[in-house]
Length: 363
Ligand code: M6R
Image (cartoon, protein in one colour):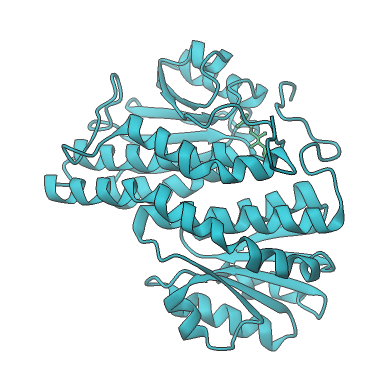
């Protein structure tokens, strides 16, 4: 039931503080300041972590790549399931394979998992549907607790995936001796703060609704970001194209000069995800470059970023300040709301966009 919401997608965006909190509490013990160990999950001797999924789930995996490598020194390879299963991947003896799926029924992800199982790898599935085929067949199930997701565009399942992945990356860091007790406790505190930050982030709704009318007129929307905000840029673009049918692409901000900048003209909008972190000044120069060429630039940042930009962007969406593992979950709220309101302005069928199915059970 949609309750007071206009669409399931809107309801699911608003449910996020609650369901992400619920998911995190399955992974974290805030009293002890520890990530709860999960039976069978042992990254200590892993040579590599393979992460496989489709669409939004693969972007969650790409964000997690930054986390596992930085916090646990664990090499990660992320693949799209449809590519992975046909490219004859070379395995190493201690590879651990993690599959990400909301439905647990996506044909390519399921077949990729079966392939890894047959090759003798430990298979973990991060899954939202506990009774799904993937949940039954994987060696280890890591649950997300988003509850049923009805909107075809994935929102709450994505942020619950990110919450679980963040906890697992900290666990990997602990198991591999990279994170001591004090550091673990501070990550746990930060993770437990995510639902509150997401609830604050939802208050930008009015700012976004205001920008959406104009954005709905853009011929192309480019999303730019660095580090974890690069896959977040791709997720933002996917969300927009799925429900508003505007051509949107996400790029690493540093790639701008290697091609995409050629697209910039007056009716192109550029969304730059630029939290005030150690790469802010680099992302800021991308804002200046595209602005100078006539694009309309919307910066998604925080109060410090907004102050530093001082008129350089055409518009600014100001999120609450979030650090480290929390930052992508907060930014996700902004890209979801933006896509949602643009689609509402265009009058599309938000929950059942054309040509798309909720669960892709054929390849
Ligand atoms: O059920 P899954 O997580 O395996 O689905 C994967 C993709 O089909 C899914 O994320 C798709 O990209 C969504 N429509 C994104 O909004």
